[in-house]
Length: 423
Image (cartoon, rainbow, N blue to C red; front, side, top):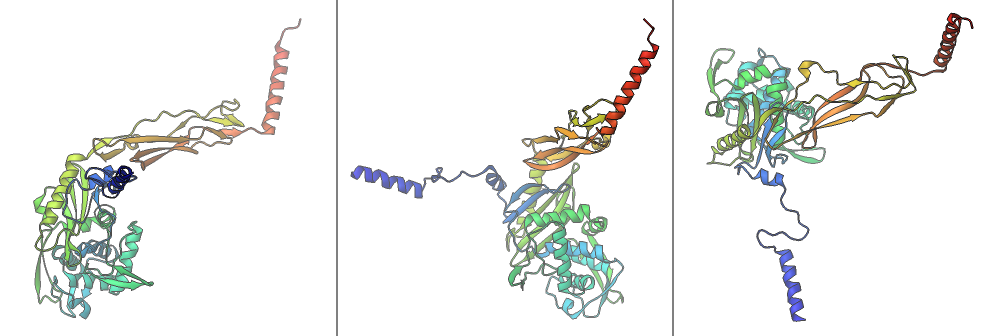
């Protein structure tokens, strides 16, 4: 009896406190994804390596966890100013803008600057007063500009992002009975960066500003002059780096978002909570680790295949040949330049092709009518879909057609009788 009780107690202890390398009953082992997230041993609390063209996440660590983002906020401030403003706009400093904390340009109430000059101040030196001047000029107020920022985030599909300030200073506010924090996720931040560098109608201007190493300007009265130097050290540390933004606050820690071009591949990275003082260089070592991982592991592969598509039977129809219920041929109707699908893939990733096509159709069928799709999938997610169209036309079988057909057959028979020789 004592032996049985001892066995039972040992079993309970094993279930509650499994030995290293074992797992409790019913507990699933770590997934391959979870193991991959720890592979690079990054300092950042959240990180993303993203395909800068498609937006696909190639590597993620807590990529959907919301965190403060500090001055990486300013990529949104910059792109909205470019899209809603004019570079030659004259912007006057308010008392609110002049009172913004360091890091700042040191503007004085009433001073006027060109919007273009303020954008270089914003993105190269990360000046908080320049950010507020831009926000008040474009949005009418800090609150009005925040509404523009949040609407843009929603338009880009960034569901876990909330902006309060144009400069990224830590902030909270209560809205609709809910306390919200100025925050984003690594995935959302990288998506916003992808928009700035590749999709925005003002991407050229954005790239020109963020890729500049040094910039000189004066206030509009010519009383003071300023020189700005780019703090994005990756521009000189890594070949192919062409845009980015650093950030730091006490709540956010060190943050970074940036993009690199390597052998035709565009990579975007985002780092949140990447150390606190004195670990200012953690973000650069993390950036190199993420980017090197992408360059070593992912390459473009052509995955397009010419499809073999069956003809489709058409019920109650009359083909152009005049035959009943003839099948109609189908195709993707692609031009030669469209017959290509190159994806950034690792060696162990495979793309599958799924064809969905109707087994039969009911007349009438029109040439160019959509009858199915071909979808290319990666890891179960659709990456490209091509429509399948009918190549020919099939009319509906009607009573009038049948009568005409019978009458035509009768006349044909009469003609044949007339030409037959008499017996």
